[in-house]
Length: 228
Image 1 (cartoon, one colour):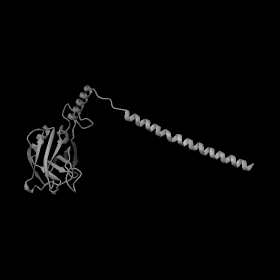
Image 2 (cartoon, helix red, strand yellow):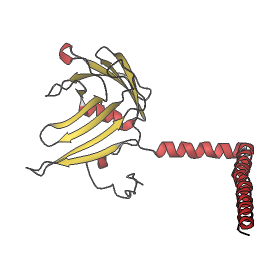
Image 3 (cartoon, helix red, strand yellow):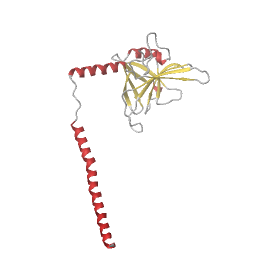
Image 4 (cartoon, one colour):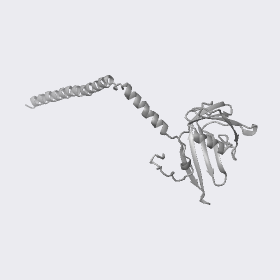
């Protein structure tokens, strides 16, 4: 009697193993079938083609967004001893220059306008990686505003002789041209890097925001910092 029960128990145990095995086969198949269906559906799906009128409207909207866009950044700092403020407006080049080691990886040029309570009004350029040539030889840069002929501006070293930064002469002339331009190109020379050209989208420069003045009458400062 005991032996028969033991045999029956063994058979039952084997049956349970077989059922588990079959169930695992079905459970493994389901996800793969689901995935293959999803893959087939995604590969067969195509975005609907735009009509000529829709493409024209999309181009018009893109043009409006670009015309209203501003690539400027504004900030200010306060001297803790005098409570006097320094104002900044800065913009980064759209393109990069590629130098050799140890400055590989792409370098951008940043143009900054500064109004300082002690040092006055300045414009300076700074390369993210690289070195400007020394200004001892009277280094200059060429700046082109839109399609006008390029103007030449002389450079000056900063007080700490930082090789990544140069002050640009002629703040008033520079700012006057800048405020009327949409695109500006700067050509500068770099140590063992030759002459390079950088492009800036300087449109919609906001001088009032730069100097932290209240918006002009009839205009409001929106959440994204533009005047409307």
